[in-house]
Image (cartoon, rainbow, N blue to C red; front, side):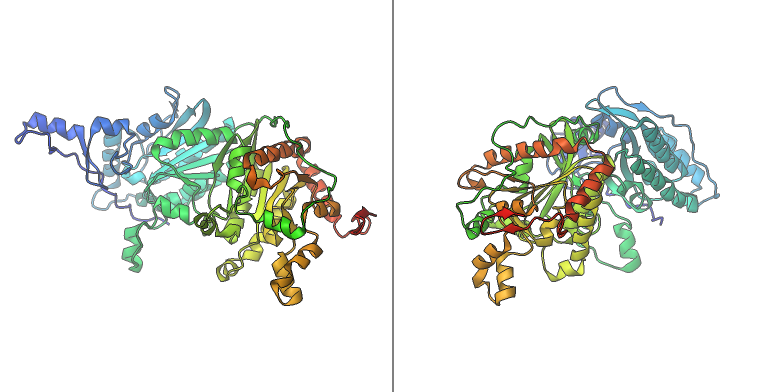
Length: 590
């Protein structure tokens, strides 16, 4: 799986010519200008060297990220004076007697003289905003950052250190791929590094990738794409086969932006594209959220949090459905912002795309870290179109599945926000396995060994809602609904027309109070008198209190107790001994 060394996006040469320079500078003056000015390879602007340094080697005119060596990278991310390098004692060897236009030993000596290090990697321990992390950084200036036996061993050794010290591992890649000069031995480093990432995953030690320009071949197809969270720099080229290799082997023309970090984000392969100026802060937030949690939830004060006794509504069922669908109701991302103390979005299913109809990430709730998921809609046409009107495709549910497993791995409770008319029923969704994606989510929620709380905030449509609805505790907002099918769909199937939707809505018993009587939900979260959309912040605070009440007793249970209780909860539906029968005339249960 080795690829030829990737052609470098040319780092702009030092230029002795700038507009302020005298017409005929002296040799000394020209040399000074050579050091002081850099030309941006993207926009062609000349940037004064000190200004470029102050801007973290990012072009202030166009945002192009210049390549930087490992020591500069660490200096930008680490707390001052905190980095301690691991020994750089292993020197690469010419085990194959390899020679092309130059013998391999000569190439190694040149690279060692140029970089001052034994091979294309720097490893060590550092802190970021006071949080310790083991770090390994590839150096592209050393033979294109290619991975030979020394690089593979250094990554594995860093993983072993992270495992021994129970510290997160940060892997920063810049590489053309496996080192051809070491043949099949370099290929074996893909397996070696991957198995140590697997060991960290099994031990629940976080791994964070930061992929920079370029990240290709055997590096991208091993440790650089296996982290729990994968970040990338803007404009970084990331892929398996490089553009030149693709063109020269299969003669395929590539679209604009192909293999860029932004392309990978759109196609679900990474979690975020993070500009250099924000990387330290983003890394610090992730380390905090993935660090030890204090099981301290926010004080459950303020408005009444949950009603567990049915209350007759003054609204008709149809009016409740209309309120549940009101375009002004708070969206899931708005709840995330109001309810939680911090939230870092994670993106993509790692297979096909990043579905905007289903959002999620890591959040802080008091002292407790959580994984949060939810269907996302919007308040105007543009937002609704972007989120596909809250109807996820399979990649949305597969993103949710990935984050559910993430939560289980790190022992983080899961909070789900349900607001969807249903899963998207299009041709492409069926081709990509919509039913399987939903079924996998339902199965995974049933077996998670962490607390799960779900809240129906608007529409709870069919299996598309249940994919986030299998929980230890299920809450529903007062004017939300939860149903096997929409009233219109039910009317169309049973009466041949949607005109009887009101009748169907009544028959489905889909309102909060009716669902509480049936035992489908465990509590009703009150709304302002005229609906959640009239006072979004107040509604969010009530939801926050409800979540604190629901999560508190669950945090005291271990994984086996949670799974067993969750199974009992769903086993009771349809069991004649456990399922209450409701007289809907009197609302009596027997």
